[in-house]
Length: 430
Image (cartoon, rainbow, N blue to C red; front, top):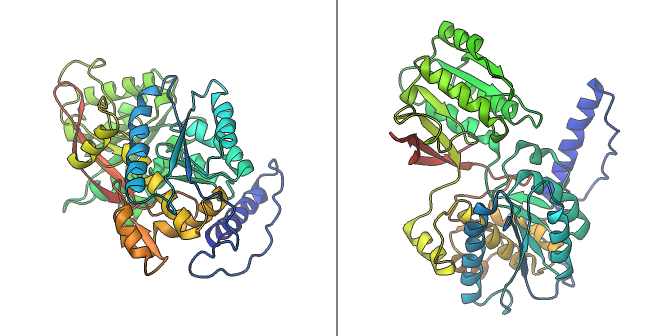
């Protein structure tokens, strides 16, 4: 067990025990045994458990409703592997890609595909794209001792899962945008009055962002002037609009998820009609979308939005197109690329391509050492020290003890006259 995972387990168990004091329904959790203090750098196994060939499994939705996300991530992995192999591979052996379809949540394709990947001796899995499927993959990863690195799963609940050190993500968690919003909205010299209107759903995404946003605003000595909740079934927003008018905010932020699409559109329409137009209205990552067919032209012109992830450079887009000339969307490609690079570097530092060794080394290669910005540059650093800090095309990708990345990169968007969002700027927050 590595240093960061032992620490994480102790912290999570402590949190669970606190909750148990107030709620008797969950089963008690056994306290983990003590672990010895580790060295500053990972200690390689005396006899590597891997077979000397790094096999990268991909688990992207090549079928189902999210299939539009697969091509970019597939190209991201392929681009990374091409660069790694051009530099000599891992221990002189080329890295291999083993692809499988994650399917969608309503099927058991994920479980079937994961089992197939394990049979083909993959050492790490990049994917899945869905947060629901990512959660289902965690027990499979633990059982197989194969780490899963998702480039796209953002749900807050994934941080709270006991994954035993086998789940990571190179995309920031959904609630982290609270830091980006708070810092951006309080950056001016004149304090703004900010209201938050959000939907509460069963998976608690809305409340997770709410709590982070409120805490982040407090750091900037700012409080919400209105804090309004609606349900995914809400059709009447009169009370919420009345409360907003009474509070007279300068900015209204709407936090809602894909599961509340109908209510979200209704809420946005009512809020705009109440006079919160242009930059007075901010949308969040799970409702910043194309509304060109939902509202008449100009309705959302100037409205702002925030979405996780950086924008790819022209150079990186060219590299992706060399892997897939038909590629037109690049979402999560950079995160998939970085996930692959981190796995390869973890195998090198651990001197072992086995999944368990990679899982134990991922945290250490992501932060705290000598910075390197490419695979070749990291190889140069590794000639003198094993203590590296890979910063990738998607940002700093520093893993936390929970397998999240922090800070996370968030892009800011502005709606045009056709109610489509256009990238404006971005940065790392959290």
